[in-house]
Length: 137
Image 1: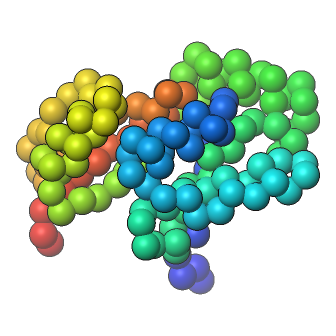
Image 2: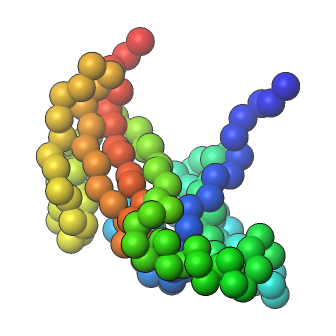
């Protein structure tokens, strides 16, 4: 019925700060950055793969009326609406070292898991990010 997931969304409070974090620190690239008038459409993706994008969305119209958007922003501030992004890499230790060099707060080191080796962190808005080097098979 479906062929793939194209875009997923994370709530962020400041799209410029999100852009700096996801592109400047994590090393993703901008897929789209458009002013639609009623909202800024800002997506990022893994370099060279526009088939899967993350919409860095500020809670507000058109999806939410202003009163609901204010409540959502309050929940984001408290970390109560955090989403999760899972990224895969061929060298989790090199990625961890690169992110550390870029000043990303890394609360854990890469750890062996049944599915591979991974570590986690949070973006400035509380969204969880897991980066894994997956075991073949």
